[in-house]
Image (cartoon, rainbow, N blue to C red; front, side, top):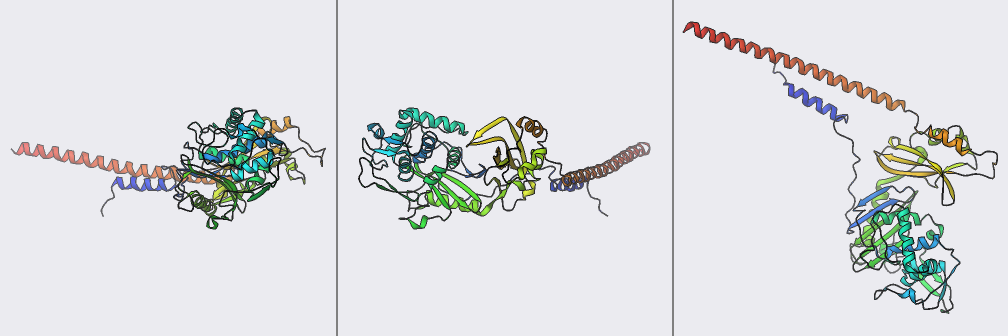
Length: 463
């Protein structure tokens, strides 16, 4: 019978080890995203910040009028909707020919909220400057506020030079940073109301007798003149264009329990020529809604509250709980992925942090194969309904920091031990077999050497 060479055993061993993932590292293979005309794009989950699509998402681009999302957010955070803005000539400075406006005139008075409707729906450049002058005293100071706010969000490739997005070489951002800004803006209820409005009738002012009808420029939300671009899941967004920036678009969309923000920059256009920013965005959103699903955070492994809050965990189950997560807290997985395989990391702040009027005491980060797919802040909510049931935060921090790791999954431990033993057994058998083959070959070589030597002796004496 023909003997199998020792190299064959090595090949079999390699295939076995590879099948168990010992030689090759596991990777999180991403399905190919749809081809779009945009040079850069990003799709982000609004609640968790998880990234679903990345096409050059950190490449610096010129934003055009999607800048106005940041202009509006800073205004909402530094004023009240009822305050009255008086416009003067400084509101009309540094314009390009044909720049969007709502025909505000010098000396006109308008409420902050209506000014922001003009900015977000009609992309009014003069409203941006007027709001900036009112809040900060001058436009440059307000732009500094915009840059400072972007820095607090973790924007690393963003610098604003004006309030409206008109082209300037030092005015840039990237799809990822813009998604961070758009996500933060949606946490503001007034912004959410404005950005999702299709049409709005402004009241009359001291300079305008009949008011003014505003129509949202975003065709996926308000497709009056281009019905083919209407998108049933669209919640709002902001358009942008200059001939040097090309077409930019921010779009919010929600389907079932998943709310996404899509940013496309330097798309082809204009609509209705295709491809364009609307066809790009529709492709990306449809891809995400088809391929991904959102899981509730409580389904991530063991129940997080059972080990994060130690003896305080019963307080989570009250009708008016003292401890809670963000509304809709969850994580994003591909529909084919197993939710039980995700990992959760819990961290605690040294002292509570005020966020959106709530007391954040820590956060949960959900990962899938070392990639962040979701998470939530952990909030402590003192309650008036149960005044006797409160938490001593000093005690909570001490206990919670000692319970950061989830309970051991014995099923996983058993599998790891089994695979380890099996792998070692295979290695040992392969080593023994290789050693037997090596010894046999050594004996053959020694035998052949003696045969050759005896043959030389015989030849010598017979000569």
